[in-house]
Amino acid sequence: MTRFAEWCTQADIPAAHHKLQILTADAAKLGAAVDIVAEVVPDHYLMPGRLADLLTRLGREKVATYVAEKLPTSKQIKSGDLGEILCTTFIHENTSFKLGIKRLRWKDHRNMSMRGDDVLAFDLGEGATGLKVLKAEAKSGVKVQAGVVDKAREALSAFGELPSPHAMSFVADRLEAAVDKPLRDALDDAQMKRGLKAAHVTHMLFTFSGNDATMTLTTNLAGYSGGSAQHYVGIRVEDHQAFITSVFAAVEV
Picture 1 (cartoon, helix red, strand yellow):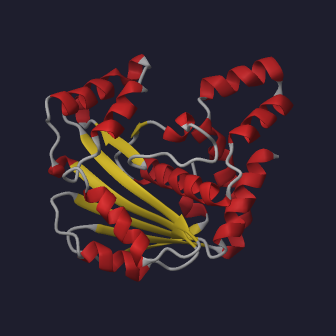
Picture 2 (cartoon, rainbow, N blue to C red):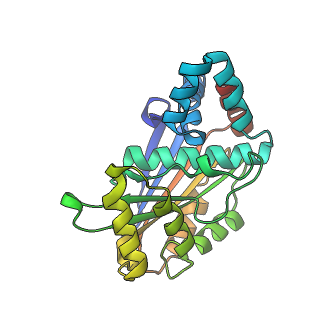
């Protein structure tokens, strides 16, 4: 995983009834951060079994070429994809929502954005007693401003605070392993029995930027009045574009 604690300092910002965390990358640790993040990137574009099979049959050099052809070449798409990857890994490392898929594996084209909810993650509770959902919007840019955060807020609150039906079905349709059956059944039940409520959903608004988004996130969070728990996260890497370039370059080596 991306082990944020090894290369970022974290501040928990007071937010009534909700959660706001700001992580700031340590400039002295960016070299190590690039290596850490680059190591997890291929797994978000390729199924592990597929990668292992290619390594066995074709060797590392051919696999490196194959992986490189999956990666975006557009600066804008690289930024968006890495924001989504960081959001996904943050969720898995720092919340109870450990279940789900890595949806970038199903991109139509490496230089196209995917539609729908950026990240969905799930928690079935002890003994699969009840489905809880984390619905996340990830925004990445050199300077994330209020307008971008407002649009993310609108997306999170769409569909009555719930994940979109298409996004839920997209995940369920790709849960094919036997070990994933409890989650797939829970998603199907939530869809077909309409058992999911806003109180079962946590929203995450996640920013990855070169600027300090603390005030923008604080202001936006203060304006939320819906019925879902809120968890806002801002990760700041001051040289945002250089970091992205370095991560993707490291993956391709």
